Image (cartoon, rainbow over all chains, first blue to last red; front, side, top):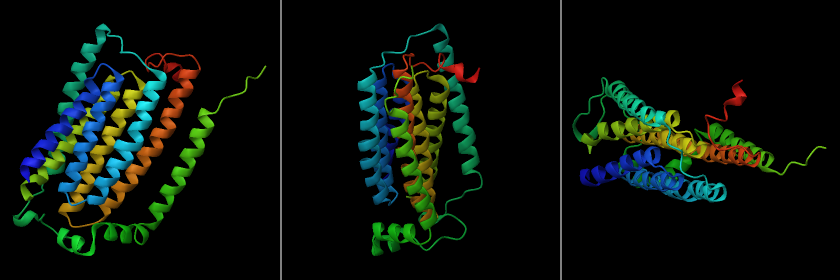
Length: 177
Length: 101
């Protein structure tokens, strides 16, 4: 278990670094695909099978195809190296390390993990054993269409607005004489 | 398995920080969008981690919603980028700052 976690975590980390540090846009996109596939493995480790499948289908499939399509269409070349780029990367790296330490310190503050992977405090009814007995997708679907129905409907509205907005933005404008 | 809980959160924090640094450092708008995707993904990882270790379902439901939001955000963003490209300007965020003036 921890071997799989270590491998997937290292691959996800390398992919994340590759997105920022790659000189060519298409290499950034491929690094992001690597990162997303490694994240899907991590979701499987966390007993979230449906999220892992959606991650592969929507992210690594649809979203990244869109990215690669736009990159091929616009063919942006390599970013020109300016003198300030190295300084920017250095500052960005220092900022990223500091930010990681800050978030890590805050999130792990006061959290203690006891035996059997239990966090201290009240636990919900959806233990991995119970969820897998009922079916992971069934449990998620039950929750999505009962307790979380309003966020679900708002999300569908958001998708409609995004589709209309994208059509409006990318239509060919008639020249006004 | 219990020992991995901090590992997931630290990886999530590192990915978020890398994405945030990328948004600030890179000048290509397409790469900036990919860095935003990276930040959303790290938020997803934290949500699912907490859902798993507190035995709740809310984290997974909201991870699903975050994925939908990210997909719609990419659609609108890439439409904006093609619009900028078609208007004949170079895809460079430092040169596209005229909107703020």
